[in-house]
Length: 270
Image 1 (cartoon, rainbow, N blue to C red):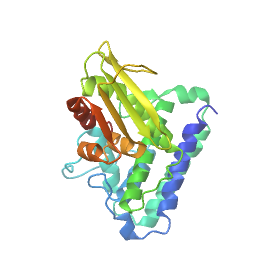
Image 2: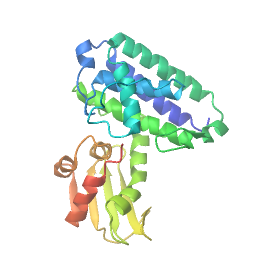
Image 3: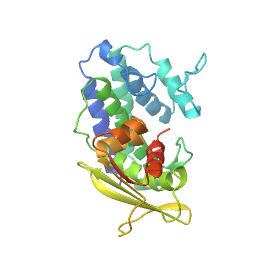
Image 4: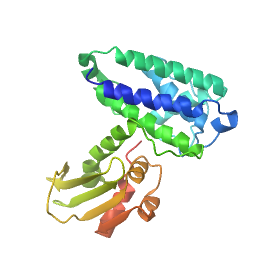
């Protein structure tokens, strides 16, 4: 099918979740992740809750004030599911996760190409289903890395989801460079990624908008060389701008003010 690669990435990522957490104790599930206020248990419950919501479940009622890290309606929905499931033991958490994600995989495998093109709910408004499910890969894959980090077991085997994540973050760079950084007209950005998914990305401001540039001999206003892992960690907000810039694997050249504005603007996840 046309979008099997998306389903494969979801299935691989969710299977890695289950494998990583198999045989763990309650203490591991309570380990804090890079997501403010969320433990490993909360991250797993977040993915379960999202899949339940997409399958038609109602958002649980929430009582009391929202934590400080909840900043919008999407955050409120996520927190409502997470908070309602915090009392569950790890065995229940994993069982519900497997049930919810398996049901999603079965449903997606049964869809026709036409159904993949139909608009679906998304946090940013209606989007074709294939675009939204790519977002599900991104969210799930980043959270898988959150779990690895919380357990002090980072991995270099990033699986099928990593390419989707890096590609989506690359696609966000024209907006970041032109709108968030407010680079001048004609300003060229070059980002050199080093690693398994390494590539050279060039973005230029044209008519006030950022545009990908396949090749050019122009000297960039800003050139950044960094590791793929540092790139997605900064784009997802898992490290801050200073950690990204000061990392030994990051090299910044060109306009220093613009380079710092870029580093500060790279976090594109809500």
